[in-house]
Length: 301
Image (cartoon, rainbow, N blue to C red; front, top):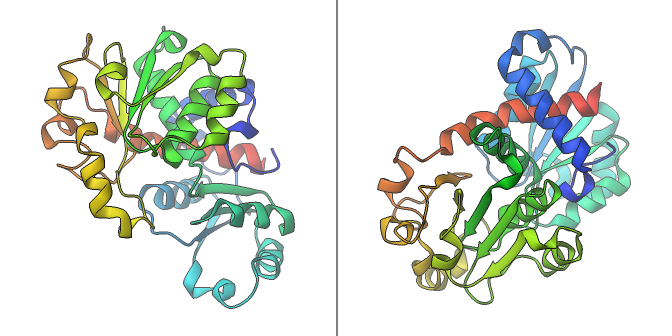
């Protein structure tokens, strides 16, 4: 792979390869402890991060390499051009993971970088998050992985966009419920409808409808970083989309609950649901380090 800005960049075969490698790493991490000796990873973050930063930083270290965390504001990226700064940064490291507000910043980095760029989160996509989520789903349904139904309820944001792409790539049914005017990226919807297995994808405005036959119910924050000025309006609009006992009564099964974190408890999901026996949010969180290691090995070996 040259770069990873969206899961669209990956073939189905490549995704399964990453999942298989992550599974091996999780089972026996010590076997990979020196594979990236002498390699350096730059983590260039404009947004705050807990899981993405730590899983890449710790993962690189555990593989024998050296991670270098760069807060955007402590570099000269806020003074000079992205082109000039990325040209320089890419002279010093083997790989760059960038976390930005605008996806266009990543596309500019790709144009001027001498080393691969990995999307650690942008306003449009969060590929590494969903790849690790697919690992979690595969663990939950090892025998029926392609026969399950995943329901995303809430904002059609970067996580939702990437979940749609990842599920369709692997032939998993994905049902999405959002309020009107908060649907997933139009380009993603058009891409999904153009795929051979487009029947796997359904878009709705009724959370009760998409939760009915769900094996997994996934949600994310209603107010993402950079949307704070919309907070009051969003909290009102999204109130019917909260994952709570009332909504889950419409489910014909007892679905697993996923959330990429950080969770705003009592907003998009209740304490009771996120702490329930069906919640796998911390299994999701753990799997990020295993999948990030698989990505690092794939790029750097």
